[in-house]
Length: 119
Image: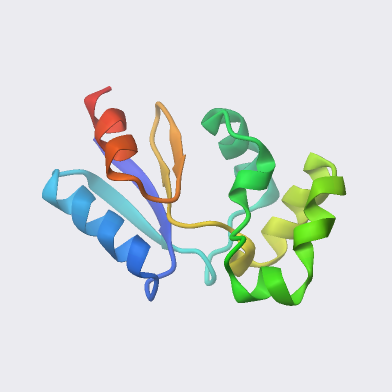
């Protein structure tokens, strides 16, 4: 299986996810979320493909999210406004993001990755 893996290399969750993928022989195209921020078009398609609401793509524990006071603002945003904001700063996006032909996973839960690899 080939997958696109969007990560922030210093993130411990990203490191765990990448280790899991390598142990399970998943060929990944690795992409730095800050140096190569996902575009609005990519985010829109990933949100659709993931089946999650756009709010799940925000890194709610991140410093930038907190500094911008987004906790109360996100709930009133349209999806387009949120996507525009996410595409403006990779640190606002929850990571890692694993994109395969079948699905999009946000964050890392071993069981979720395991399920995806069975497909």
